[in-house]
Structures are given as C-alpha cells and as structure tokens.
Length: 102
Image 1 (tube, rainbow, N blue to C red):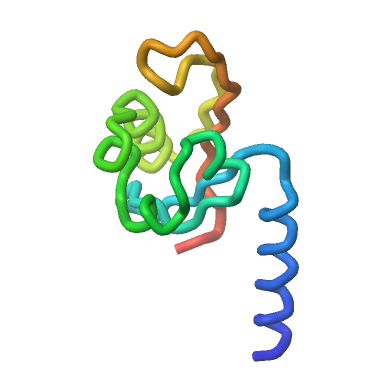
Image 2 (cartoon, rainbow, N blue to C red; image 1 turned 135 degrees about the vertical axis):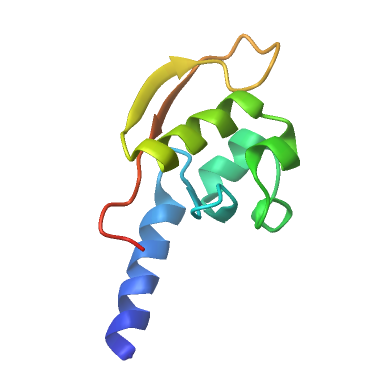
C-alpha cells in the first residue's frame, strides 16, 4: 500500500511540473485528472472540469470527437490544430489510450 501511495505521489509530482498540458479521461471521455499546465491552457481549475467532457464543460466538440475516436478505435491521434473555436492559437494535440488499463 505504501508503495502504491509513493508511486502515485511521484506521478503527481511529474504531472504537476510538466510544461505540457495533460488531461486524463475515462472510458466515457469524462475528465478524471488535469495538470496545472492544462488548467492554464483551458483557463479553468481542475475541480470545474472533473467528471465533465470537453464538449459539456467548454463546448470543445472537435476535441471531444478526437478523444471519443481514440477511445473507440484504440489508435493514437496526433495533429496540430486550433483547440478553441475562433482562436488563432495552434496546439499540438496527441490523444493516446493508456494501454493495459481497464
């Protein structure tokens, strides 16, 4: 049990210190975890995103469709594009299933 808590703490420290935004979703595309960089990118705190889909919490239907495609096919998607409708900012998006996870 201590080993699991220690590993979880290490993973949380890595996610927190990453410059890239990382969001983990469940099999229904609902947001389970968000690191600080993703909070800054989406301009929302994690607690307002948890349990929601990108479509429901931010109206990001294209991103939600990408996530659902990966969940359905099990294939990575890697593309550059605008995440926010009407924005000129381009983001590199990599959606990948966690292999070996239930």
